[in-house]
Each structure stands twice: as C-alpha cells, then as structure tokens.
Length: 163
Length: 96
Image 1 (tube, helix red, strand yellow):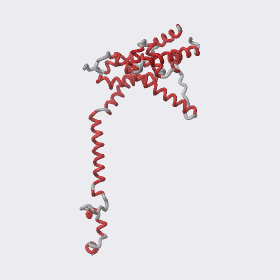
Image 2 (image 1 turned 60 degrees about the horizontal axis):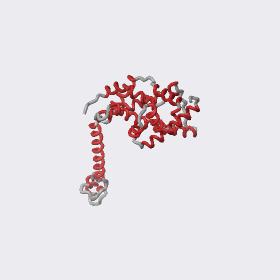
Image 3 (image 1 turned 135 degrees about the vertical axis):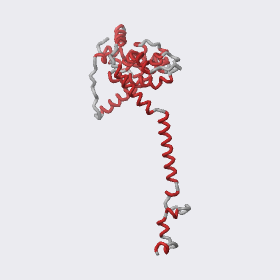
Image 4 (image 1 turned 90 degrees about the vertical axis):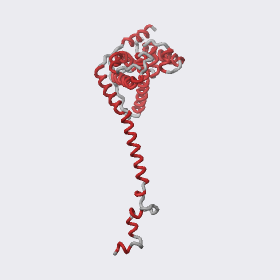
C-alpha cells in the first residue's frame, strides 16, 4: 500500500473539490462547511486508501456522497424551520444572496437527489450508469429523476424570465 | 432548449473564490481533535477505567461489611456493635 500524505492530497486536489462543492451548496458558508467535511472524511479514510481507483475518482465519490447527505440534512433543517416559523416559534432569516448564488436559484426547487443527478449529468457530463453506480440507485431512478429535475428547472427559468 | 443549455453552461463556468489556506488550517485543527479522541490507546484506557469502576462498585455493594445488621454473616457482631450492646447477655460487661 502506498502511503499518501494528506497535505499533498489537499494541495493537489483542493480546486477540484471546491469546484464540485460549489455546485452542490449555494451559500458561501455551506460551501465552506461542505468542503471541510469532505476533507475531514478524506483525512480519516486516507490510511485505508489502497489506490485501486485513481485518487480523483475516490475524491469524487467522497464529495458526491458527503454532499448528498449534507443537502438532505440541510433540507430537513429548512423544512423544520418552515414548520416552526408557521407557528411563529422562530423567525426565518432572509439571507442576502450575491450574484453568484442567484445562478443556483432555479435548482432550489429540486430535492437533494434530483439536484445531484442533474448536476452530475448535465454539468459534470457523467453517464447515467456512472451516476447510478456512485449514488447506488437503479439507472431507471436516475433517468426518472433527471427528467423531473430538467422539467422543474425549465419551469423555474421560464417563471424567472430567464428562458 | 438552447437557453436551458446556456444556463447549464453558466453553471459550468461558475467558480466562486476560496480561501484555501484558512480552510486548510481549520481542517487540520478539526482532524487533530478527532485523532486525539480516537486514539486506540486512549479509547482502551477509558474503557478499562470504566470497567474497573463498575466492578469496584459492584464489589463494594455486595461486600458483607456494607450490609447493615446482617446477623447471618460471621463477623457482623463486630460491625454491628450497637445492636450487640442491647443484648441482655453482655449488659453486665458494658454497664458495670
């Protein structure tokens, strides 16, 4: 087994991971939290990395799976906050979003899985089989989710006047 | 459809700035904290201490000395001296 230095992995692949997490998380704070969570997982898992896959493929899998659970957690938290705010138990914060964040607005209507699938397929140009393998779901589910995600985004773009 | 593709192209080009140095420092800090609490030696020491503490407590609670007024125990008259004082048999010894 080849011993790989964590700092070297960070130096070599930080831009790659940052670019990925920037697509999955909207706000700057979320991006930074997610980025750190990914590299903490890498730090813990690195001693067990056997080099069967390339380090970039391995990092991609970790990033995608961490992002998916991060988005699911964020979604549940958001829903809980909405319920609580409807009972006036908490106040909903209106975060002022910059120009970059507004690009991702049409994707906010998607559930975490649909968002991941749309980005992996259309932005990262991954094959459906590859996405199914990474997310451990059937190819049929990927196709259905991708179709629904595209429809939702197109609808959002029309409503926003971008299409 | 073309506009949807344009939108996807915008997403591809998006690359927000990052402070890699600060994030690396934070990651190393968190990783060091995690490593300390997940050291096998430390985990073993904590588990062993807990087991010893639990066994000592069990032993202490079942030890005959701590069972007050247990007359069936051989040495109970030593430890339950106050009850012995009341017995008629030894009254003359203690009272005279």
